[in-house]
Image (cartoon, rainbow, N blue to C red; front, top):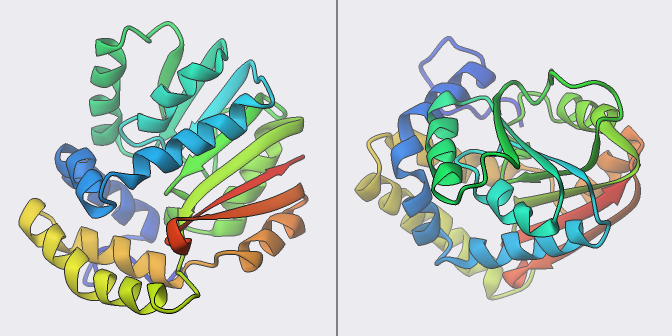
Length: 241
């Protein structure tokens, strides 16, 4: 998992490379996401919001918030405070503009920080979300331990992440799409070709389904469930502390 980095010839560690990559592609990121997932990522995020809403949280942390899409959606939960954390200042700047346009500055804070070493106290948040971010952690277990630390007891933790369909013909279709179509879209839309190659490759080796459930249990999360989405190209994981 840790071997896959955005820039093959760089001496920087994965964390620094991921930061640089997201800073570079931040301007293209939203439009590209819609194209890559045919807009279905919007539907997946709505489901995450619904799961979080069930526990009526007061405070929510959205990790790897990027340009703030999920943090903005989470405003529907009626939480009083939402914090979006990201390692890329380029992504956060775009997120701040979006928040301003929606007049949500009093509710949503965008914070520059490292998800594996967060600037928050223990048991700080009622709910924590990560959409398409856990596979960018330098060390998955360290990131998850940090999440466990800042989540309140009985708090809700929801992950939305890419996965690989296990059923025919979706499995074959997915392989063809990620190998041939995605890099082409990345090439056409983005000035950083290796970024999208990395996003595809990191998705293909990331643990999903029961494997990720077991990692969550090992860290200490309880009531771990997973919900595959759209033939299994993404999965939502819900657990608590």
